[in-house]
Amino acid sequence: MADSVQAQKLVYLVTGGCGFLGEHVVRMLLQREPRLHELRIFDLHLGSWLEELKTGTVQVTAIQGDVTQAHEVAAATAGAHVVIHTAGLVDVFGRASPKTIHEVNVQGTQNVIEACVQTGTRFLVYTSSMEVVGPNIKGHPFYRGNEDTPYEAVHRHPYPCSKALAEQLVLEANGREVRGGLPLVTCALRPTGIYGEGHQIMRDIYHQGLRLGGRLFRAIPASVEHGRVYVGNVAWMHVLVARELEQRAALMGGQVYFCYDKSPYKSYEDFNMEFLRPCGLRLVGTRPLLPYWLLMLLAVLNALLQWLLRPLLLYAPLLNPYTLAVANTTFTVSTNKAQRHFGYEPLFSWEESRTRTIRWMQAKDSSAQ
Ligand SMILES: NC(=O)c1ccc[n+]([C@@H]2O[C@H](COP(=O)([O-])OP(=O)(O)OC[C@H]3O[C@@H](n4cnc5c(N)ncnc54)[C@H](O)[C@@H]3O)[C@@H](O)[C@H]2O)c1
Ligand SMILES: CC(C)[C@@H](O)CC[C@@H](C)[C@H]1CC[C@H]2[C@@H]3[C@H](O)C=C4C[C@@H](O)CC[C@]4(C)[C@H]3CC[C@]12C
Image (cartoon, helix red, strand yellow):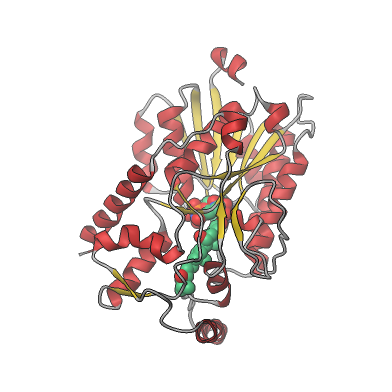
């Protein structure tokens, strides 16, 4: 793309562009992709903040649409040079049915692939997830592994199953002929737990702490490492991959890359306290206050309550059997494949990532008061 773009201006499509990660990808493209002519933002729910983006030199086109509707995806894709597909149902709390999760994450991704083939779009970057790999249903730890580390990736939960299927579709589509006779070039990025400005789960945990008098009670051993990556660095990796995919198609096409940066290896709870402590919360206990079996019993009761209440209301607490198992299983990555293949270096240091996230939390806190 580097050769051809000097003459032509690029059209990008970002699906899920109004989501937590999607918004950062959109803003990063506008800031750091000088060859952009048009940026199409496709989402089921368009944000009002999109209006502020329409004052620049890049044509910003907001498209309200559903990835499960093939014709809507095809219409949004027609004429695009690159598709960054972040749209998805990120649900591990039982809010959506397994069927809906599959329709959005798997069929939606298939629709994006077919749209690229039918309309002649040659470059597709898919936002996959660490959960394609693990933690698996056996609770096997993945300790500072990389893209080549052997690991039994067996899943039962609808979300990781859907992400694994979607990723497989994307990678298998690499090399397919698109309209015009050239090959489709695809790759998949696997973020670990993303944090940063706009992270709803962090906001939920903060509000849970406020309801408990400024305290959170340790449920996970501090020794259980959970990989986290700053949203700005994940967005940057998406922009970089999209830029390099044509020039390095032979190397990058059909590849997966973990998203990583210099965020420290900590337990999920201890990592969150990096941002919640400056907001006045404290984590009670140097080790879990309740034994794992009792936590699992509470998690199962939450799942039962969710099922019983479903006809009346949506009860979707953070603690359920799946979230407890994931939080309780070490899963961290240590890799430099993205650096080796396309020169990725984190754009934001750990200190910058932490400061930005704290500022966002505190701004949210003050606006909520
Ligand atoms: N948040 C994380 O920690 C994390 C980690 C790894 C991977 N991911 C992946 O990153 C992507 C974005 O995740 P996120 O955390 O920003 O989630 P999010 O829910 O904030 O954003 C998803 C976006 O997709 C849109 N969307 C959902 N269904 C749609 C549909 N049918 N048609 C069109 N748009 C639809 C939503 O409206 C939303 O704007 C997902 O594919 C997710 O699997 C997220
Ligand atoms: C109630 C306690 C046990 C509390 O510690 C639960 C935390 C739990 C809600 C999170 C622990 C690990 C998180 C997941 C992980 O960061 C990676 C993910 C992959 C991504 O594709 C989607 C989000 C997620 C599944 C993320 C969701 C929240 C946790 C399960």
